[in-house]
Amino acid sequence: MNFNSILIGSEDPDRLAAYYTKLLGEPTFADGGYTGWVIGSGAVTIGPHSEVKGTNDQPGRLIWNIESNDVQGDFARFKAAGATVVQEPYSFEGAPGSSIATLADPDGNYFQLMTPMEPPAS
Image (cartoon, rainbow, N blue to C red; front, side, top):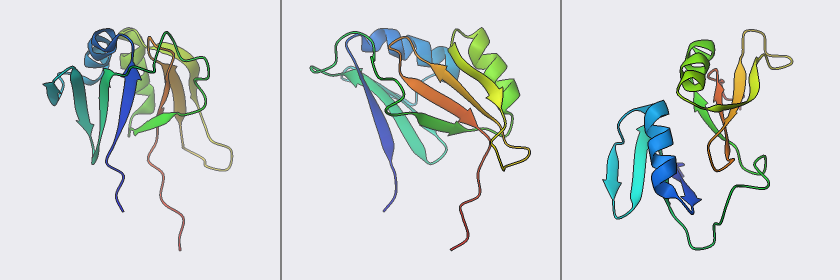
């Protein structure tokens, strides 16, 4: 199997698309009310969803991650572009040199910047 993408449903997908364009640059695609960006080998798409109203009242339930070799620099850039800071960059316990920062979009969905992690040896 291969993880392909995540779809973020919104009552106001145009607002979220404008927000993520500030953070991620011009979208890779926009069609039929859906806007998306390819990030590495996966994609994030914003689109309308009939069952989504208002802001996310449980933003920690699903958090998507973006790997970055420069968490501090990308964090500063995202913050300057209007990202809501949930948690400033910090280091993982037991993983020296690692960094993670949690941010929120206008619908209250959480996403994180994090240093690349090596998968556990099998």
